[in-house]
Amino acid sequence: MPQTGPASVFSLIEESFDLEQEGRIGSALQRARRALRQARISDRPDQIAAALVCVAHVHFRQGHYDSAQMFATESLDHSPADAEARADALQILGLCAAETNSPDVAEEYFHQTIDLSRQIGYRRALRSALHNLSAMVYVPRGQFELALAADEESLRLALELDMPEVAWFPLATMGWVCWVTGQRERALALA
Image 1 (tube, rainbow, N blue to C red):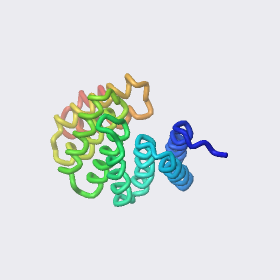
Image 2: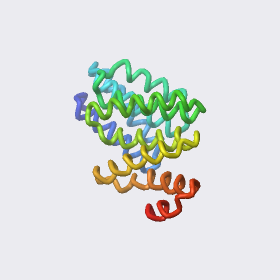
Image 3: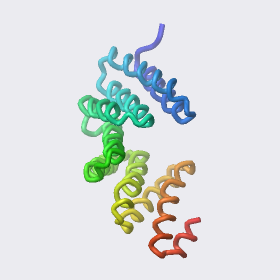
Image 4: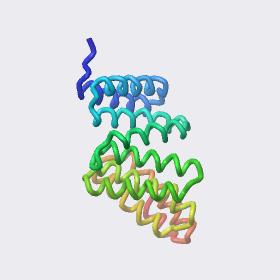
């Protein structure tokens, strides 16, 4: 008989993220939906919020922005003001806004994610939101100094968190910004 406790829901969420990283989107969505079903049965808001974020994440990765927004918004209804799931939901809403040509809305969500992540010490989400703000809002607007500042902090956090697999995201953006703004030496130093 399957467990319905926190370990079961959160292990399904972890499995879903792992499967998504492997490119097994269908399986990732199945695990996310199963986690959500189990979370709803448990009737625990923290589990429901986290599972909704997981489902939203998979939909975002598929380009289903309306569905991703719907699940992320519902997650906000279940998550306390100081929950990691809340920061993750805000970030997904920012990503969806950026992908649907609403940079002002995206900027607001990314700033909310950054502020909340700083308040609760959620450095993984902080790192990601800083880079997303840089690459998806500041660079398209030509706000290159702001982009560099955000990505410098994102890179520092990636290194501090021992996440070299994501360090290239801010490095790529910073290198491009430095190159197109004539800061060739700085761009080469990043390589």
